[in-house]
Amino acid sequence: MAIFGLGQIINKAGGLVYQRNFAEGLAQLTSNEYLVLAGTLHGIHAITSRLSPVGSSSGAQVIEGETFKMTILLTITGTKFVLLTSLSETTVEAMLQKVYDIYGDAVMKNPFHTPEMPIRSERFDARITALIGTGS
Amino acid sequence: MTIYSLYIYDRHCACVYYQDWHRTKRPKLATEGGTLRAVSQAVSPLSSSGDSTSLSTSEFINPRNTLSSSTGIVVATSEGPQTATFTPTMASAQTPNSSGLPFDEEAKLVYGVVLSLKNMIKKLSGRDEQFVNYRTSTYKLHLYETLSGYKFVLLSDPKVDSMRVVLRQVYLGPFLEYVVRNPLVKLDSRDYGVDNEYFRTSVDRLVRGLSVFL
Image (cartoon, rainbow over all chains, first blue to last red; front, top):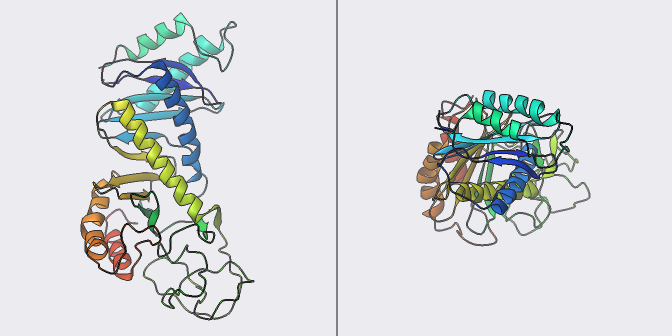
């Protein structure tokens, strides 16, 4: 179970609302760089849906590098859940669905949370840790 | 399981070659001056007089264009080898299922996406990691970049595995043979693409010979 660093949740405007490193697999970036990365990913996701040679397409769902891949789940509300894992992971989509469930439970149902704003919830953090563990 | 299209970009960030096989949404023609000449006959804008009569397969969009009779109208689409049929009528034949984007804009978008993804992956990994491909629900885009800065971009069906090997074969075979070693092809120019008959047919043969091609 090698889930590298980086889970991200991006709101529908492209801003980063949650970011978490799980393992030491990837480079340490500053928080500013993570913000820029989330924005870039949001833009790329939009463009990839326009480049389809066969009519309407979703945006990019999996982006692969040589040693890792990035899986993106786009929900109906426009929120993106991003997870970086090693190439051999097969259960990432299911994992992202579970993260979405936890998001619905711990964040959306929280009356003190403003939607589209950064997530500051211990309950959410704890449940994500229980789900994903510390990676590897 | 099929291959949709191939783009080749040079190190000046311009599209120098384009070929497609199974697109159902064809791009609209490029605007005048939008692409380099000799990128692909199927998507070039209707050329002004001066280009040779061998560029006979431009698709025709502007009915007011009263050019010399050297440019004919393609009745068939540009799939397969260039067996265009000449019909000298000036009918305004816009392809019935053209997408909203003109070709030159689409080529630039593809390049932009590829460049941004490359930078993003490099940044994330911290080492010199290459972006390989990405998948959406309807297509998969593969990238192979050479040391000289040429980027080979292939769009295929989402179910194929990595086609990086195939792109490398395109580079090692047809590209080196009919483009790099061809003294008539102006590489690295800012005006011309690398479209020529030998290259096009050999790439076509290579792609159609793949097991994943339909």
